[in-house]
Length: 95
Image (cartoon, rainbow, N blue to C red; front, side, top):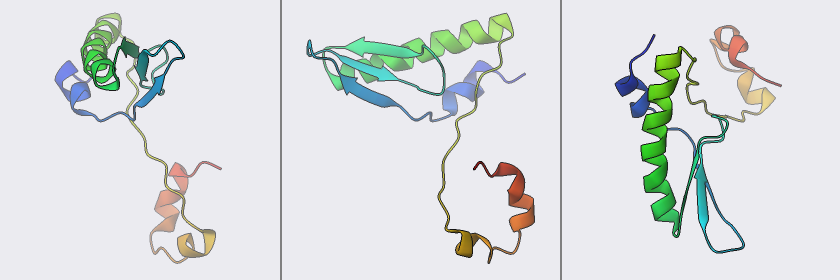
């Protein structure tokens, strides 16, 4: 199992949005329920870093698997067909 320090080094995509009351929410969508709030977007982001560390500590203590961040690439089929090692990449393709 990975250690806390390793997971804190990952950069997870974060979504920040503003509520009608003027407060902000920053969330890591790939980790259900992992979000933080603030009066500004920056405050919500700072708070999220603290919440993220606590959440990962709890996950490790409880033996819960932590998700690793992923990226999404869109490659046209005709370009993908020209990639020499595309057979090795097939396992990572989601349609």
